[in-house]
Amino acid sequence: MSEREAFLQAIRHDPEDDTPRLIFADWLEEHGDPQGEFIRIQCELAQFVPSLDRRTELLHREQELLWTHREEWLGSLPLLDESIRFHRGLPQLRLTWDQWNLLNDDVNLRRDFVQAGVQQVQLTALPEMGAFRAVQSLMRHLHTLDISNNPNLRWSSLLAMTQAGWFDHLHTLLARNLPLLANDWSQYRNTPLLVLPHLDIEGSCPPGFRRETDCVAQPGKGFWNSFAMRFLAIPKGEFRMGSPLGEKAHEADESLHTVRLTRPFYLSRFPVTQWQYQAVMGHNPSRFTPDKGGSLWHPVEQVSWEDAYEFCQRLSAAPAERLAGRHYRLPTEAEWEFACRAGTTTPYYFGHEMPIDGANILNRVGATTPVGSYPCNAFGMFDMHGNVREWCADWYDRRYYSQSPLEDPPGPKNGERRVLRGGSWDVVAVEYCRSAYRVYFSPTGKLVGVGFRVVCEML
Image (cartoon, rainbow, N blue to C red; front, side):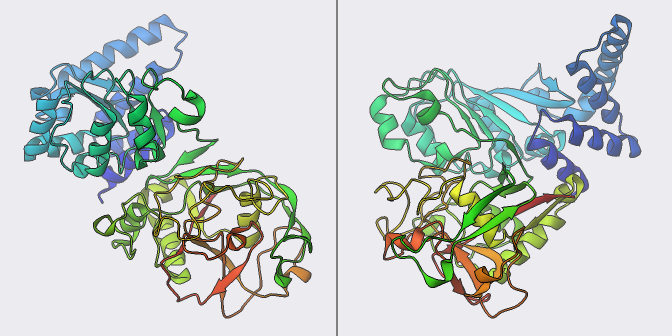
């Protein structure tokens, strides 16, 4: 990945945050590119400019730069969209279905699309059931796709687009005012489409569904990194770690004790997906891949603790992540349980019993499921019960709880096996998915029910 592409990826994950744009502007100006000045001007104009003279000066210079350099920045893209709009210094396109197909087929247009750093595309005149072929090569560069107000689209169309990989790398899908039907929604409500970071189908919700819970993803406070990983802030706090003697299936290594986490931390909202793992590591070790009944939205599995550790190292070394000052690691066992419980003291974050549709467990599905397919907890964390067990940073010691420090326990200093938490799709008893349940495995071992999620630290 070139330096320019790394900057554009960093911008792509939060287009409204001017910080990565201004850093990119610095880099452009250092390389003699006037687009750096243009980005600065548009960012300033997007804010409140109290001085009329200053605003007039900025607008005049903006138009001067556009007049001189527009063709240089856009290449052949005006052939598709003559009135291209710039948002904070980068272009947004409005294309018909035929123009979109032309863009996909033309090598020069695709090159100019990537080079220009297009952040958003609005598509019009979409067919009801077109040949929604794979377009990941372009979608991976977009933050937002707007397919609103297309009267021919149905949920079957969206499902076809999902299966073709349209949304694998997307952050925001605007699908407002589409003629979606209630029976369609019932059929497709668990499709990976609904795991998108931000899905806006305002005006498209069928009758009988509550908008805030059924139609719109509800991310908490947090951020996206450059590999489409959503992180939510987990607050600091004190809790009772482990389980009481009277809890059903209580184990001897779960002795109840007080733990205080003295700092808030960011934890990935979902287990690491196959796409994210492949993007960072260059391969996909999973059994349930797209050609074997899974998808890139499924959690990565068949990864060892050492693989998960290496993933964190490589992710931390990615240019956009280093630029943003982000470092990644596996959660400690205490952090994992605190995030799983989300303030609860019961065996599951649902309460004393696990609902039959609460998690992917007991081999009911026969495989992993797309991340986020089951209800989240009060912190907004998905798949803490079931789907895949998750590696923690700690070595396993069945006696560690009796000597664990009160504040921020890091786990034993050494050992032979690492801790796994959370249960998996193939567990044989629901109790193996309790918030307090601990299991361990060799750090080099790999199983089809084992994946991981990660903590992000801001440097």
